[in-house]
Length: 227
Image (cartoon, helix red, strand yellow):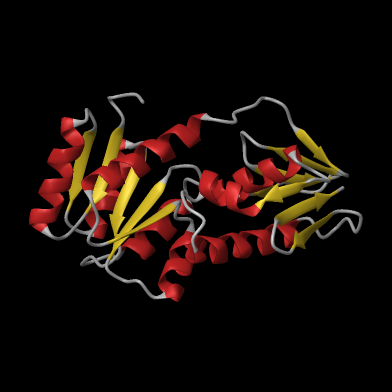
């Protein structure tokens, strides 16, 4: 991993913020520490970090609101949420907003560092200059767009693009649920599985103009893109 990777850390607990900052800096990361959401948004726009680590409960602008605003401008930057909230709906909301990972407090620094490194690696993997054909749809993975015939292009989110990429590469075959959860979400636990179901539903809607294209649920195994 590039040791100069920059991390925007938004954490309003001063002691925890400094611990995380110092731990990441000892691993070679550049860390931009902010203590509220408004400041974090400003630093994001000015500094263009490579990954965001956002506390959910922050003054002035909470982590979810901050992530929503950033996702309007950037669908690709990895986002990790840090939170003491553990309700299923909170976890699902975090992923639906566009978060890539969700770490519950208290957590170990080693676990956070592993997750940051994994997400940074994913951003450089699977890059391809080729456009992928899905029936009459054209899927541009690098640009994260989906176009049906000559209609306007639809912009996909970072996670939608990566999930669709794997479905297309394995079309007419079962995409193992546990494998893709571990690859894109970091684990195959219940919360991540619920999140993936949400993204599958979104992709089905975006592909619904062509009846011959289906994403079916193979119970107990995973999903299959039929084309």
